[in-house]
Image 1 (cartoon, helix red, strand yellow):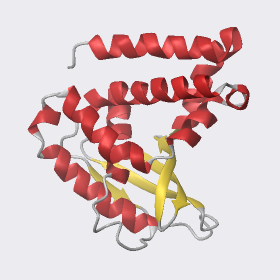
Image 2 (tube, rainbow, N blue to C red):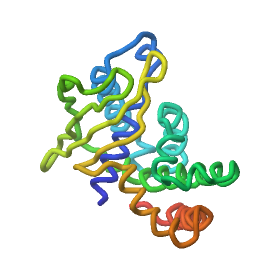
Image 3 (cartoon, rainbow, N blue to C red):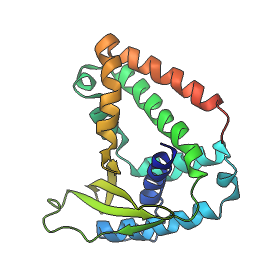
Image 4 (cartoon, rainbow, N blue to C red):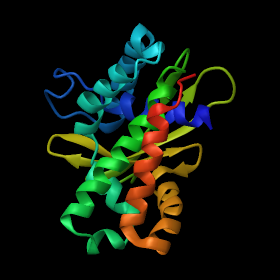
Length: 209
C-alpha cells in the first residue's frame, strides 16, 4: 500500500510541477509528462526537507505546484458521484477541502520514500483520444517490478490538466468512489465529509515513518 501511495504521490507531483519555460508553448502530452516527471524526481531527491518528512514543506509543494494543475473539481465530483449534483454550495466547498486535505495528508509521507525511481513514458496509442481528452501511459521503474502509471488528461488552453490516475491497474476516481459509497448511502454527503474530516485529523497527527 505504501508503495502504491508513493507512486501516486510521484504521479501527481511529477505530472504537474511544470516550469514557466515548459508552459511557454503548447506541448504534446507525452513530452510534457516525460520532461516534467524527470524534473520532479530530481527535485524530490535533492530536497532534504521532503526526505525528512517535513509535512509543511511537502504541503506547500503540493498546494503551490500540484493542485493548480489538477482539475480537482472534476476529480472530486466524479468520486462522489450523483449526489454531487444535489449538494449545496457549502457542502461542495467542504467536500473539496476535506478531499484535498485527505490526498495531501495521505501522500505527503509517501514522498519521503522516493529513492531511485524513474518514469518511462510509452508512445501514445493511435486514436488515444479526441485531442481534448486522452490517456498517457507510463511505467515507474526502480527496484522490483515496474508499476503501471497512466494519466487521464484533459486539454486546458494550451496545456493539460490531470483528472484521474491509474496506479497498477486501479483508477483513483473509481477507487475513491467505491470507498465513499458506503458513507453516502448511510448518511449522505454530510456523513462522508465528517468521516473525511476525522480521518484527516488522524493522519495529520500520526507519526511519519
